Length: 326
Image (cartoon, rainbow, N blue to C red):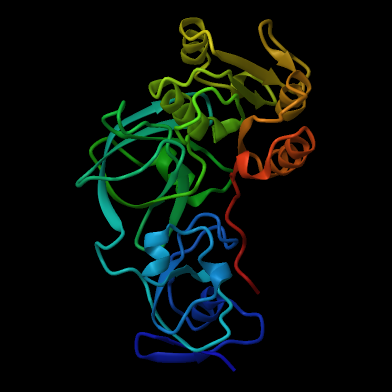
Protein backbone atom coordinates (compact mmCIF):
# COMPACT_ATOMS: atom_id res chain seq x y z
CA UNK A 1 0.00 0.00 0.00
CA UNK A 2 1.41 3.39 -1.02
CA UNK A 3 1.44 6.06 1.67
CA UNK A 4 1.25 9.82 1.16
CA UNK A 5 2.53 12.19 3.83
CA UNK A 6 1.06 15.69 3.75
CA UNK A 7 1.66 18.21 6.51
CA UNK A 8 1.54 16.14 9.68
CA UNK A 9 -0.85 13.59 8.27
CA UNK A 10 -0.33 10.25 6.61
CA UNK A 11 -2.85 8.53 4.35
CA UNK A 12 -2.89 5.34 2.34
CA UNK A 13 -3.92 5.36 -1.31
CA UNK A 14 -6.49 2.89 -2.55
CA UNK A 15 -5.48 0.98 -5.70
CA UNK A 16 -5.58 3.35 -8.68
CA UNK A 17 -6.40 6.37 -6.52
CA UNK A 18 -4.74 9.70 -7.33
CA UNK A 19 -2.93 11.85 -4.80
CA UNK A 20 -5.51 14.58 -5.34
CA UNK A 21 -8.50 12.33 -4.65
CA UNK A 22 -6.85 10.85 -1.57
CA UNK A 23 -6.14 14.28 -0.06
CA UNK A 24 -9.59 15.63 -0.92
CA UNK A 25 -11.14 12.54 0.63
CA UNK A 26 -9.08 13.29 3.71
CA UNK A 27 -10.66 16.74 3.92
CA UNK A 28 -7.82 18.90 2.56
CA UNK A 29 -8.62 21.81 0.24
CA UNK A 30 -6.13 21.16 -2.54
CA UNK A 31 -6.44 23.60 -5.48
CA UNK A 32 -7.74 21.76 -8.54
CA UNK A 33 -9.88 22.24 -11.61
CA UNK A 34 -9.84 19.96 -14.68
CA UNK A 35 -8.81 16.67 -12.98
CA UNK A 36 -7.18 15.36 -16.16
CA UNK A 37 -3.70 16.88 -16.07
CA UNK A 38 -4.43 19.79 -18.39
CA UNK A 39 -4.76 22.94 -16.29
CA UNK A 40 -1.92 22.40 -13.76
CA UNK A 41 -3.98 23.98 -10.97
CA UNK A 42 -3.25 20.98 -8.71
CA UNK A 43 0.54 21.40 -8.94
CA UNK A 44 2.29 19.84 -5.94
CA UNK A 45 5.86 18.97 -5.00
CA UNK A 46 7.39 15.75 -3.69
CA UNK A 47 9.86 16.58 -0.93
CA UNK A 48 10.59 12.88 -0.43
CA UNK A 49 10.16 10.11 -2.99
CA UNK A 50 9.85 10.22 -6.76
CA UNK A 51 6.56 11.08 -8.48
CA UNK A 52 5.76 8.93 -11.55
CA UNK A 53 6.77 10.28 -14.95
CA UNK A 54 3.13 10.32 -16.10
CA UNK A 55 2.36 13.00 -13.50
CA UNK A 56 5.18 15.25 -14.77
CA UNK A 57 5.08 14.84 -18.56
CA UNK A 58 3.49 18.23 -19.34
CA UNK A 59 5.57 20.24 -16.86
CA UNK A 60 8.59 22.37 -17.71
CA UNK A 61 12.04 20.80 -17.19
CA UNK A 62 12.64 23.16 -14.27
CA UNK A 63 9.52 21.99 -12.44
CA UNK A 64 10.30 18.33 -13.15
CA UNK A 65 13.81 18.69 -11.77
CA UNK A 66 12.36 20.18 -8.59
CA UNK A 67 10.02 17.16 -8.22
CA UNK A 68 6.80 18.99 -8.98
CA UNK A 69 3.90 16.91 -10.26
CA UNK A 70 0.18 17.10 -11.07
CA UNK A 71 -1.76 15.58 -8.20
CA UNK A 72 -4.86 14.71 -10.24
CA UNK A 73 -2.94 12.23 -12.45
CA UNK A 74 -0.37 11.14 -9.90
CA UNK A 75 -0.82 7.49 -8.93
CA UNK A 76 2.54 6.74 -7.32
CA UNK A 77 4.10 3.32 -6.91
CA UNK A 78 6.19 4.40 -3.91
CA UNK A 79 5.66 6.44 -0.74
CA UNK A 80 5.75 10.21 -1.16
CA UNK A 81 5.97 13.22 1.13
CA UNK A 82 4.20 16.06 -0.65
CA UNK A 83 3.43 19.75 -0.29
CA UNK A 84 1.71 22.50 -2.23
CA UNK A 85 4.05 25.08 -3.81
CA UNK A 86 5.41 27.43 -1.17
CA UNK A 87 3.70 30.77 -0.81
CA UNK A 88 5.09 33.09 -3.48
CA UNK A 89 7.06 30.30 -5.18
CA UNK A 90 4.84 29.98 -8.25
CA UNK A 91 2.06 32.46 -7.49
CA UNK A 92 2.08 36.15 -8.40
CA UNK A 93 -0.22 39.04 -7.54
CA UNK A 94 -1.98 40.60 -10.50
CA UNK A 95 -3.97 43.83 -10.78
CA UNK A 96 -6.93 44.10 -13.16
CA UNK A 97 -6.19 46.94 -15.60
CA UNK A 98 -8.96 46.53 -18.14
CA UNK A 99 -12.24 44.65 -18.63
CA UNK A 100 -13.85 44.76 -22.07
CA UNK A 101 -16.66 42.64 -23.55
CA UNK A 102 -15.59 41.10 -26.86
CA UNK A 103 -19.02 39.60 -27.49
CA UNK A 104 -22.00 38.62 -25.36
CA UNK A 105 -20.16 35.74 -23.70
CA UNK A 106 -16.44 36.58 -23.84
CA UNK A 107 -14.68 39.21 -21.73
CA UNK A 108 -11.20 40.59 -22.36
CA UNK A 109 -9.29 40.74 -19.07
CA UNK A 110 -5.99 42.61 -18.90
CA UNK A 111 -3.73 42.04 -15.91
CA UNK A 112 -0.56 43.66 -14.63
CA UNK A 113 1.67 41.43 -12.50
CA UNK A 114 3.87 42.63 -9.67
CA UNK A 115 7.08 41.06 -10.99
CA UNK A 116 8.48 39.71 -14.29
CA UNK A 117 6.30 36.97 -15.77
CA UNK A 118 8.21 34.90 -18.32
CA UNK A 119 5.74 33.43 -20.81
CA UNK A 120 5.22 32.79 -24.50
CA UNK A 121 2.15 33.84 -26.45
CA UNK A 122 -0.36 30.98 -26.49
CA UNK A 123 0.56 29.51 -23.10
CA UNK A 124 -1.94 29.61 -20.24
CA UNK A 125 -1.98 30.78 -16.65
CA UNK A 126 -4.10 29.78 -13.68
CA UNK A 127 -6.24 32.56 -12.24
CA UNK A 128 -7.55 32.14 -8.70
CA UNK A 129 -10.89 33.33 -7.39
CA UNK A 130 -9.72 32.46 -3.88
CA UNK A 131 -6.93 30.41 -2.33
CA UNK A 132 -8.35 27.09 -3.52
CA UNK A 133 -10.52 27.80 -6.56
CA UNK A 134 -8.76 28.55 -9.83
CA UNK A 135 -9.20 28.09 -13.56
CA UNK A 136 -6.87 28.04 -16.55
CA UNK A 137 -7.02 30.76 -19.21
CA UNK A 138 -4.89 31.06 -22.33
CA UNK A 139 -2.78 34.15 -22.94
CA UNK A 140 -3.70 36.23 -25.99
CA UNK A 141 -0.96 38.77 -25.28
CA UNK A 142 2.58 38.80 -26.68
CA UNK A 143 5.32 39.71 -24.15
CA UNK A 144 7.24 41.92 -26.58
CA UNK A 145 4.12 43.70 -27.89
CA UNK A 146 1.73 44.05 -24.97
CA UNK A 147 2.12 45.85 -21.67
CA UNK A 148 -0.40 43.65 -19.86
CA UNK A 149 -1.34 39.97 -19.78
CA UNK A 150 -4.49 39.46 -21.85
CA UNK A 151 -7.08 36.73 -21.29
CA UNK A 152 -10.36 36.03 -23.10
CA UNK A 153 -12.77 34.59 -20.54
CA UNK A 154 -15.94 32.90 -21.78
CA UNK A 155 -18.86 32.72 -19.39
CA UNK A 156 -19.68 29.07 -18.78
CA UNK A 157 -23.13 27.88 -17.65
CA UNK A 158 -22.93 27.62 -13.84
CA UNK A 159 -19.21 28.48 -14.07
CA UNK A 160 -18.14 29.64 -10.62
CA UNK A 161 -14.94 31.37 -11.70
CA UNK A 162 -16.07 32.62 -15.11
CA UNK A 163 -19.30 33.93 -13.59
CA UNK A 164 -17.33 35.71 -10.88
CA UNK A 165 -15.00 37.26 -13.47
CA UNK A 166 -17.91 38.48 -15.62
CA UNK A 167 -20.14 39.70 -12.79
CA UNK A 168 -17.92 40.73 -9.90
CA UNK A 169 -14.35 41.40 -11.02
CA UNK A 170 -13.51 45.10 -11.21
CA UNK A 171 -10.67 47.24 -12.56
CA UNK A 172 -8.10 47.80 -9.82
CA UNK A 173 -8.89 44.55 -8.04
CA UNK A 174 -6.01 42.24 -7.11
CA UNK A 175 -5.96 38.48 -7.54
CA UNK A 176 -3.50 35.59 -7.67
CA UNK A 177 -2.17 33.98 -10.83
CA UNK A 178 0.16 31.07 -11.36
CA UNK A 179 2.03 29.90 -14.44
CA UNK A 180 2.74 29.88 -17.23
CA UNK A 181 1.99 26.41 -18.57
CA UNK A 182 1.34 24.65 -21.84
CA UNK A 183 3.25 23.93 -25.03
CA UNK A 184 0.95 25.61 -27.56
CA UNK A 185 3.11 28.53 -28.73
CA UNK A 186 5.03 29.76 -31.76
CA UNK A 187 8.55 28.39 -32.15
CA UNK A 188 10.83 30.56 -34.32
CA UNK A 189 13.46 29.06 -36.57
CA UNK A 190 11.44 27.92 -39.58
CA UNK A 191 9.99 31.18 -40.93
CA UNK A 192 8.93 29.61 -44.22
CA UNK A 193 6.88 26.75 -42.69
CA UNK A 194 3.11 27.08 -43.36
CA UNK A 195 0.97 27.52 -40.23
CA UNK A 196 -2.65 26.39 -39.84
CA UNK A 197 -4.55 27.78 -36.84
CA UNK A 198 -8.03 26.41 -36.04
CA UNK A 199 -10.10 27.56 -33.05
CA UNK A 200 -13.60 27.76 -31.63
CA UNK A 201 -15.00 30.30 -29.16
CA UNK A 202 -12.40 31.71 -26.77
CA UNK A 203 -9.94 29.26 -28.32
CA UNK A 204 -9.11 32.27 -30.46
CA UNK A 205 -7.15 33.73 -27.50
CA UNK A 206 -3.98 31.62 -27.83
CA UNK A 207 -4.22 31.67 -31.63
CA UNK A 208 -4.39 35.48 -31.61
CA UNK A 209 -1.20 35.55 -29.54
CA UNK A 210 0.54 32.91 -31.69
CA UNK A 211 -0.41 34.76 -34.89
CA UNK A 212 0.92 38.11 -33.73
CA UNK A 213 4.07 36.48 -32.33
CA UNK A 214 4.72 34.77 -35.67
CA UNK A 215 4.25 38.06 -37.55
CA UNK A 216 6.53 39.82 -35.04
CA UNK A 217 9.24 37.26 -35.77
CA UNK A 218 8.91 37.96 -39.50
CA UNK A 219 7.29 34.64 -40.39
CA UNK A 220 7.20 34.48 -44.20
CA UNK A 221 5.30 31.25 -44.82
CA UNK A 222 1.50 31.13 -45.22
CA UNK A 223 -0.49 31.59 -42.01
CA UNK A 224 -4.15 30.53 -42.18
CA UNK A 225 -6.47 31.21 -39.24
CA UNK A 226 -9.95 29.65 -39.13
CA UNK A 227 -12.19 30.71 -36.23
CA UNK A 228 -15.61 29.13 -35.81
CA UNK A 229 -18.84 29.48 -33.89
CA UNK A 230 -22.46 28.38 -34.17
CA UNK A 231 -23.48 31.95 -35.04
CA UNK A 232 -21.67 35.08 -36.16
CA UNK A 233 -22.39 36.60 -32.74
CA UNK A 234 -20.02 34.03 -31.23
CA UNK A 235 -17.07 35.34 -33.24
CA UNK A 236 -14.98 38.32 -32.15
CA UNK A 237 -11.92 40.39 -33.11
CA UNK A 238 -13.06 40.03 -36.71
CA UNK A 239 -12.15 43.64 -37.52
CA UNK A 240 -8.65 43.31 -36.06
CA UNK A 241 -8.04 40.02 -37.86
CA UNK A 242 -9.28 41.33 -41.20
CA UNK A 243 -6.95 44.30 -40.81
CA UNK A 244 -3.99 42.00 -40.12
CA UNK A 245 -4.90 40.00 -43.21
CA UNK A 246 -5.05 43.22 -45.24
CA UNK A 247 -1.61 44.38 -44.09
CA UNK A 248 0.18 41.00 -44.16
CA UNK A 249 0.08 39.18 -47.49
CA UNK A 250 1.09 35.84 -45.92
CA UNK A 251 -1.88 35.84 -43.51
CA UNK A 252 -5.39 34.64 -44.37
CA UNK A 253 -8.34 34.85 -41.95
CA UNK A 254 -11.53 32.79 -42.40
CA UNK A 255 -14.45 33.24 -39.95
CA UNK A 256 -16.75 30.19 -39.97
CA UNK A 257 -20.39 29.81 -38.94
CA UNK A 258 -21.93 26.36 -38.52
CA UNK A 259 -25.52 27.49 -37.83
CA UNK A 260 -28.30 28.20 -40.32
CA UNK A 261 -27.70 31.95 -40.72
CA UNK A 262 -24.34 32.66 -42.34
CA UNK A 263 -23.48 36.30 -43.16
CA UNK A 264 -21.54 37.26 -46.25
CA UNK A 265 -17.75 37.02 -46.01
CA UNK A 266 -18.12 34.01 -43.66
CA UNK A 267 -17.51 30.36 -44.50
CA UNK A 268 -20.33 27.88 -43.93
CA UNK A 269 -19.75 24.81 -41.75
CA UNK A 270 -17.85 23.54 -38.75
CA UNK A 271 -14.52 25.26 -38.49
CA UNK A 272 -12.32 22.16 -38.74
CA UNK A 273 -14.33 20.86 -41.71
CA UNK A 274 -13.87 24.16 -43.53
CA UNK A 275 -10.17 24.44 -42.64
CA UNK A 276 -9.22 20.90 -43.58
CA UNK A 277 -11.25 20.99 -46.80
CA UNK A 278 -9.58 24.23 -47.83
CA UNK A 279 -6.15 22.90 -46.82
CA UNK A 280 -6.26 19.18 -47.70
CA UNK A 281 -2.50 18.54 -47.86
CA UNK A 282 -0.77 19.36 -44.56
CA UNK A 283 2.58 17.72 -45.20
CA UNK A 284 5.18 20.12 -43.81
CA UNK A 285 2.59 22.32 -42.05
CA UNK A 286 2.59 23.27 -38.38
CA UNK A 287 -0.93 23.03 -36.94
CA UNK A 288 -2.43 24.70 -33.84
CA UNK A 289 -5.84 23.58 -32.52
CA UNK A 290 -7.58 25.40 -29.68
CA UNK A 291 -11.09 25.30 -28.28
CA UNK A 292 -13.83 22.71 -27.89
CA UNK A 293 -12.39 19.25 -27.01
CA UNK A 294 -14.45 17.43 -29.66
CA UNK A 295 -13.22 19.77 -32.38
CA UNK A 296 -9.63 19.46 -31.20
CA UNK A 297 -9.78 15.66 -31.09
CA UNK A 298 -11.33 15.33 -34.54
CA UNK A 299 -9.03 17.90 -36.09
CA UNK A 300 -5.93 16.25 -34.60
CA UNK A 301 -6.79 12.97 -36.28
CA UNK A 302 -7.70 14.56 -39.60
CA UNK A 303 -4.60 16.79 -39.64
CA UNK A 304 -2.42 13.72 -39.12
CA UNK A 305 -4.22 11.84 -41.89
CA UNK A 306 -3.74 14.91 -44.11
CA UNK A 307 0.03 14.61 -43.69
CA UNK A 308 0.94 16.76 -40.69
CA UNK A 309 3.62 15.28 -38.47
CA UNK A 310 2.52 14.50 -34.92
CA UNK A 311 5.35 16.70 -33.64
CA UNK A 312 3.91 19.59 -35.66
CA UNK A 313 0.37 19.33 -34.26
CA UNK A 314 -0.09 21.47 -31.15
CA UNK A 315 -3.41 21.21 -29.32
CA UNK A 316 -5.03 23.08 -26.47
CA UNK A 317 -8.47 21.65 -25.68
CA UNK A 318 -10.59 23.91 -23.46
CA UNK A 319 -11.96 21.42 -20.93
CA UNK A 320 -14.52 22.31 -18.30
CA UNK A 321 -13.89 21.31 -14.67
CA UNK A 322 -14.87 17.72 -14.00
CA UNK A 323 -17.13 16.83 -11.08
CA UNK A 324 -15.51 15.57 -7.93
CA UNK A 325 -14.85 11.84 -7.74
CA UNK A 326 -17.42 9.91 -5.81
